[in-house]
Amino acid sequence: MARQLDEQIAGRFPVGRRLRVLDVGMGRGAQALRLARLGHRVTGVEQDATMIAAAREAVAREPEGIRERVRLVQGDGRDTGVHFLPGSFDVVLCHAVLMYVEEPDPLVAGLARMLAPGGLLSLLVRNGDALAMRPGLTGDWAGALAAFDTTAYRNRLGRDVRADRLASLTATLAGIAAPLHAWYGVRVFTDTVADDAALPDDLPALLAVEERAGRTDPYRGVAALLHLCGVRG
Image (cartoon, rainbow, N blue to C red):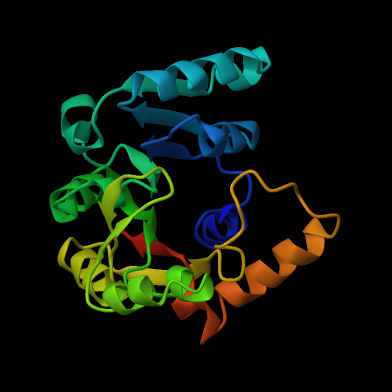
């Protein structure tokens, strides 16, 4: 996903431009720190106290030049209008957040308002069109049958959450003046791998395959996750 995001940034902004980035639901700050290391100014928003504490610790371990480019805000991603003015950012990230939001459209609309004209909105969501893949590949036939007719599922943390369908999110993005510019699949072949599995020796080859599949039909359509990139008009 990071490679996909970098591709979209490189194709939209001049080389060397220092971007204003908002990362909503930043978790432990992996993407925020990665982008700060590339020279961008990043504001991370995270509601969970444990997560933002971990992010603060990670930022504190960075050199001063990187630390000063990162701002952390503890808050709900649905309240961006309280903290920031419209049009304040060039790039807005919202990765692995919408599955926890019962009504995602207001959140997405609020994120789009944070973008300057021509800004990039990056969403990572569970693929509602492929929920049957994981149970099917693990031989859970009853679970696979049930998944065809729903966008609700139980994630690996044991939480009951929701997925998004490509067509629905495409319509949402069009309706908030940030139409879909590109989309990718994420975790096409690796979704059934255990979270604590050791990294394989041929990791570069694995990443190359996943990256190729994530941009190629029909493979991207059955990925566990969808990475959608909208552009503010």
